[in-house]
Figure (spheres, one colour):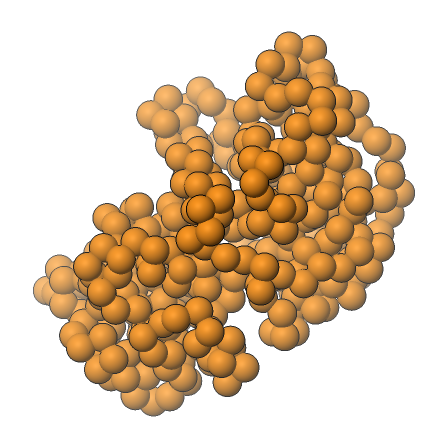
Length: 336
């Protein structure tokens, strides 16, 4: 089979043996696999948790090719998507139902021995979710990315009737915008650095889109909201955006860190204490977030077709370049 590997030299397409599912495992035939922002950062050497070489691919939709002994959750031929983090199921966090915070957490497609940017992969049956027939393959490939803002909104305490700022205009930011609208946020303002990103974001119905590089970007966001933000989603998570997020949420707001920070940042602790700000990390998702993401896609309340660009698996290197170019929102590799 064909498999993508990211090395210090770049993105390579290699040949590999089709893996065999062990007990409790499933062999999945990949249909679509998304290139995540974290994959782009890893290629650029900017991801804090992924070392090269690695086998990428954790956003995936495919079909069950075969099952190992003892598999009962899925059957051959069923359409599935992957919840990619690999918990130990035994530590304190796993026992409490917070397996996304597992103390011995592994992550499929991010340092694991397999990734979904391959024609086939094997994985524990517990990491798979069935894809309803009502969803096409592109929608199915967005279940995993959509789980991230669904989880972040849950951690924020819900968004109904609240003022929301979203920093960034990539896949997760645009999905967060749609989640905020679906939940009934009072006003939503998004920031982006490039005019192209701002024009694209405007099509998804924010109350305003602000130039993130403007000297008065914070003041503009607050003016469009009519007040400070109740919730700020930082989907970039760099020093400049964290500075803006804290200022936009001052006073009494919540900053949810959704993006993966490429490096450490500092925060104004005296202001956080005195203004009673909450800085909330958001780590991936849980099964209930996948269930909600699926329901939102099935209902049509979240739309994703206009976010997707599909490339063949054989063009993986060019597809990674497309994903890094800023000209596309979500690049999907098609393996079937």
